[in-house]
Length: 390
Image 1 (cartoon, one colour):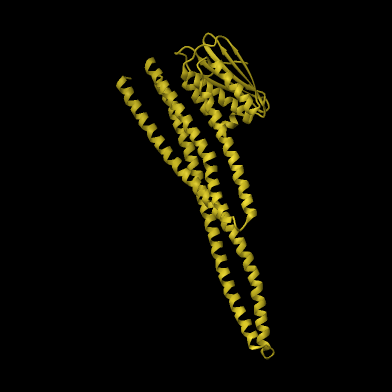
Image 2 (cartoon, one colour; image 1 turned 45 degrees about the vertical axis):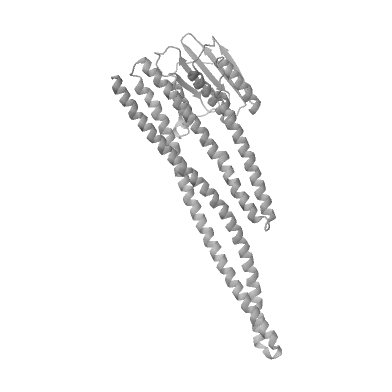
């Protein structure tokens, strides 16, 4: 394959990636609008339901009054010679006013019921649209990752210098994907909560003089949303911090990260390192850092344990990273079959970018080991990891 052909191939894939990325951004905008509209509709539905309940009470009250007025009118009509002209006039007028009032209340009740049903129907429609948009967004993101991962396989046929340049490009693209993930986390968490809080504040303003108990309830909801948003922002800020490696070696960077992680999450990490702490390129150190970060997060969230072991070993040919826990474990085949393996796929793609291999050993009740092997020699293949017991 000539250099010109390689450039043409690169241009084709670049255009394809740009098209997919544009489509993903368009879907993101649609999903955001759907989420926003859903929030408005849910608040409006709550208001309409409240008004409907109030009008039903009013209708029942005026129905009783109207029945009483009709009974009074019938009584006066049957024995009109016992009542004065004023009494008869008042009975007729009172009955007429109550009938008109009841008619007006029935019309309002009918309108509110129709409006409630219409909003419920719109919520169902937007829920379906939102779910589809989110699914498309996830599928498009996965397609981008898979395409970027397959580009490396194509690149295996080119010269070593060009392959190295492409690998560095893909590392940058991977970092951009991480930034998009952070944007998505902000959108799904704090941004949605802030939008709901603003809507609820408007609702409180309208209810301030009519329903204090409802106002108190909404204040409580807003406070909880605020606390949740603050926690989400702190988590995102903390997840950003590990990328700031300080150039003193992977072991030193990991020690700093583990120290902060243990303090933040009350989580114990037993870290050991064997062999020479060799100098790594920035892109490789960041990639390994992210792999350890994701593995440790998985242990904390899914293993049922508050402790993990991390081991680095440098041999003459390879660098080994082992992240181990003694938690509940899982059925690896079952997880992949049930489409819950996006995290595993992401780790595999990241390992492939650095020409390494990933081996996950786990079974229910037996804990989990994540074994990453990265060859020091540039020409090493990226086949299955050899057996490596920690």
